[in-house]
Figure 1 (cartoon, rainbow, N blue to C red):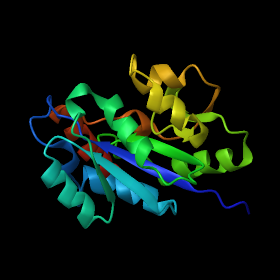
Figure 2: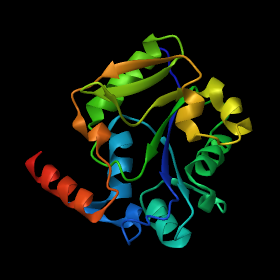
Figure 3: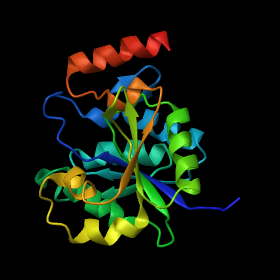
Length: 199
């Protein structure tokens, strides 16, 4: 088997303005949202996991370190998510082949989804891979590290999505509505809690 170095980036620097509490630390079942994101990638055998912190950096950073994650601080987090993406990309190990990019508020993705993306990447030809459910793209995309430079020099217009859309990508259908479900508001979080109980 070709051994590829795949990293996972968890974006946890945002303001959580609509939630009124620090999103990465919110409980969902027996762990925080950040804990769920870590568990997802750990279940798929990934060891290079880093989390970008900004808002409430100290609290989120201590939870991240408790979870054994590498912490990258983004002092520019108020400028939006793309600034966190750039901080993360510049901190990736040099021999990274590809990386997942996951906002911390999308915590209920199935490990099978990530494994499917990994398998397709190893077998594929280095295009960006997007999971889809019912025809809609979700998270996390798996991004080839060859695009790192393009991300670092991009001015941020339209965010990561706009930039990635200019490069070849492939959609992979997965049986996992979790790729679309984010905890943006307290209602969303309640819905995720209900859903988790049913799983």
